[in-house]
Structure formats: C-alpha cells, structure tokens
Image (cartoon, rainbow, N blue to C red; front, side, top):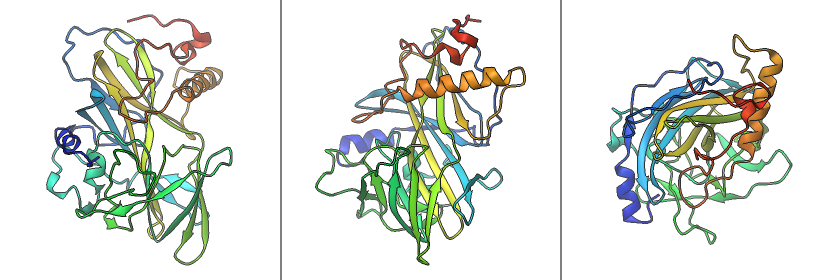
Length: 328
C-alpha cells in the first residue's frame, strides 16, 4: 500500500516475530482458554498443518493488530492435480531477512509481499503461461484486473476502477520475476477453479484439494475462543517447475488482549484427533465450516470482522452437541 506516504511509513514499522519457521504437525481439538494477568503481552503463535508461517504486529488506520502470514506449497501434476509439498516448501521471510532485498525475487519470493500486513484482495502471478479465468464454485466468473509496473519494480492496478488506495506487490514466482500479473476484486476462495494456458498452448484447470478452509483460532485472555478466517492474498503458479505457492493472511486486533493465535485448516487429509470419534470429527468440521462461512470479508481496512471476542461462534466446534465449554 503505497499511494500515501503515511501508509508506507506505517508498513516500515512492522515487526516480524521470528522462531516458528518449520511446518507443524496436525493438532487435536481446541481446549478451553484461561485468562492471563499480563494484558500487554504479545500473543503466542502456533500452527498445525503443512504451513510455513510467521506473525507480525502492525498499526494503521484500522488500529493495532496481529498479522498472521503463512505459505502453502503444492506440486503440480500434469493433469492439474495439486499435491501438498512437505519436503521442499517455499520458505517465508524471517526476522533476519534483509529489508533492502524486499523488492527482489529470491528463494522466499518477494519479501515486500510478506512484509505487507494486510491485503484486501488476491494477486496472481504465473510463470510459463497465463491465467485466463477464475470461476467460483457456483460457476460465476471473477473479475481479473491487469496490474502495471511501477518504477521500483513492484506492480499494482492503475485502471479506471482503481480504489482510492491500491496495494502493490512484487511480481515473483519464487526467485523468478514475471509479468505484472493480475488481481481479483476480492479474495480467491479455496474452492475457486483457475483456467490457465501454458506457453505451449495447452490449457490446464487448477483447483485446490477440497475442502480448503484455513483459519486462525484466536484465544482471548478473557477466555473466549473465536475462529477467524484466513485469506489467500497471493497465488504464484510456476508452470515450468510445476509448483503452486499460496500466501495466506489473517488479521486480529491486539485489543482486547489475545493469549494465543493458532493457525489451523480444514483440508482434504485432516483427520480426527486421537480421542475423537469419526462422528464427532464430522460434527466439529461442519461447525467450523458453517461458522467461517458466515464471516464477512474486510474490505476497506484490516482486521477481520469475525475477530471479535464478543461474537458467539458455533459451540459445536468445541463440544459435542454444542454444550458450553468450561474454562480450565
């Protein structure tokens, strides 16, 4: 976001909190959260699943908030099937990443993209082909906006329907700089279908393994446990090396105080916890999906509307039949 000097200044104030850089293991069911005495403490951060992830703090017009960033890497089969890549996933920036390289395309992609605390839509970059269409699960065609290059090498949309503040990206597919790319008017959904044309002329349809619903479980110091959506903010598609990387993001206000943020997902290969029946797992999964589907999207400024400790999530997420959880 660079149309206003003030916004650029705030972005440079971001603090990347390092330490969680390796893919986590699938966790069990959420337990009740207990209040903490220190309301000024930075929230703990953990993740469960095949993520490379990190957390930042930021301050802008929305207020002071946490920005959870993550990447998921998939290998791309010749028929368009996507398979989670666990052993050779694209890394993220860390607290030691040199900001002077943020506009370069390196092994971790574009550092600037990952250091931006909030995006209001999804950017898409392709190497070895072009993105022709994005369709929703219901069949509707999503509007694609062609971005243009700026002097510093970043790209943003500059057309007639540009927003008052347009966010910019570095057009990287891993270490490869590509054409300016495209952006949606909102976020790519996990169920969207992408139609691509390879440089060879062949067409390919891509769809993430279903279901694909990442989320953050925000555990507040007052004991509330609130599921918060995680958005796809960047998709880099490498049709040469057969690789797709998604950059994900979620934003949660720092006040009221948060004890812990847990990055989770409902994905194709997630399984019941060790002490959980198949029926209970299905109930909990359905409750998470239904709850997150009711969450509005942030449009004009950061902080997810559902990141609110006063809202009442579907209680079936926490206990069978929706019984009220007890604080520990």
